[in-house]
Length: 314
Image (cartoon, rainbow, N blue to C red; front, side, top):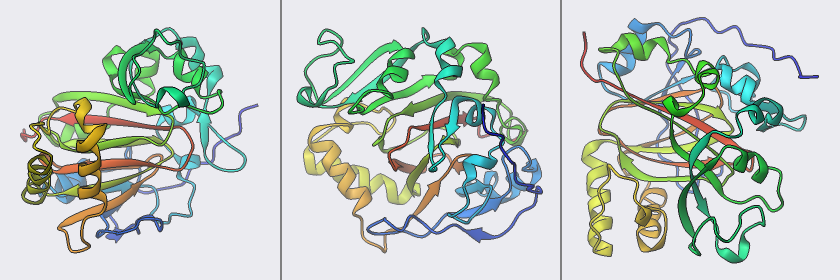
């Protein structure tokens, strides 16, 4: 029997507060300021005033207390339906619910040398590389999550429009996105997989509302004037020509991944940037042009949604 989920009573009001970053962070940057409420109760005028108009990163969170299990109080339907709370804490995939959609084709990333692969993938599925992209059914992730050892398999940047309607209904677009600007959605994607997962330093062409569905992620953000030199210096160092708007294979393996990761996650403490832990039910607003890199925290399955909206006001 599925355990009943008790929800927090969280009035739609603004509280000036910061959430401390992960205690495991080697070199913490300042914390992102928080708006303490749930995304479905956040008033549009508050979101406009505190985040959208000034174009400042903000964490919309149920609680700034890292000891609160936000997954148990999350208002996002996908978090309650797609994942199950484990008795010892954390989350796992709700196989019984998701397997009815097991044949849906999705884009995957796999980070795993051939010698470390589990037998759930045949040799014909991918080439012998440490990083590969390919398309496969959702059933691949469901099967992989029950294998041992679990592979670093990631459903990366899957279009929400490609999901069955029932799954899309579990992820309604927050009202603040539809009302804060013109209401246009530039792009909407889901990311779901087995940790450790990693997104390299990049920037988006539109404002980004990053919704966390399962487990925790650590995000580092840099304003346009700080992030651009970091990315440029890395390209000069490795003599690369990558573009930050495209998540190319070179960002995920080899010299570029090593250099980018070092520049972002081992940067000096006085670097002009922010750091924040994003937990289930949290929504992180990332303004247009702000550079960011993301890492999973812990060993449980992780899932996020990225919604890129139009910038212009009505």
